[in-house]
Structure formats: structure tokens, C-alpha cells
Image 1 (cartoon, rainbow, N blue to C red):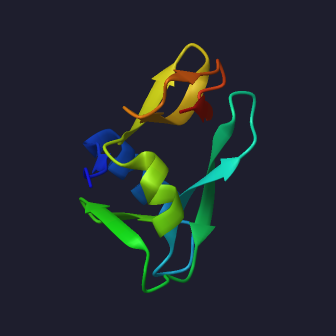
Image 2: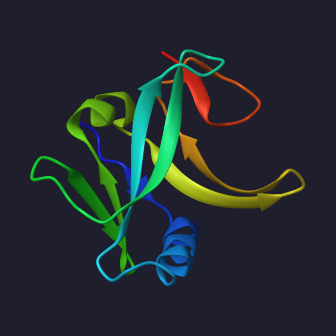
Image 3: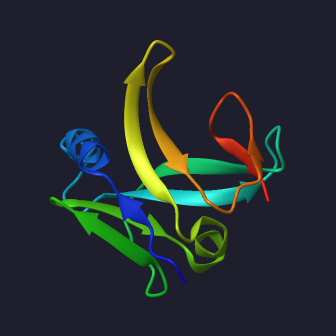
Length: 108
């Protein structure tokens, strides 16, 4: 299965967010059914880690992905962008055949 890549920019932003959270907290990214294109990404602060979670680490930042979501995110790059629309995490997913303007919804 292809690795998920966390960019330095995303790691820096995750570290900023986690600075206000209890020690040991991580960013959890999951894929849910729904959204305007069929699937959507969910971003949550996780204080616990399941044995089967994949932990992606870079520069002190940790992202957790559960096994089901991992199937939909294999090969993806997690980035953080700051543009005219605003600041957000952006997931470039090679498996997605289309996505919507909000950037958090995609289809396969």
C-alpha cells in the first residue's frame, strides 16, 4: 500500500494546533461516506490511539489514520495551504477521480 506523505508545512501547522491540546494529542484524519462528491475527510483531535491506527510522523507532528480510511487515502499527500480562500489542510489523493470546491469531499 502506498505511503501517506505529510508535508513540512502541514507538520508545522499540526504542531501549532497541538500546542494548545493536552500532551500526547494527535490529529486524526478519517474518510466518511457523504459530502457533495461521495466521500469526505474529517479532521479531529485524538487523545487516544488504537493499535491498528497508522501513525504518520514528521518534525514532531503525528497524524493518525484508521485502517478503513487508509484504504481510501493510500498514496495521498497531506499539506497545509494559506491562500485567498483561507487556511486549510489539503489532501492530494491520487485515488480521487473528482473533488468539490470545498476541498474536503471527493469521489473514487
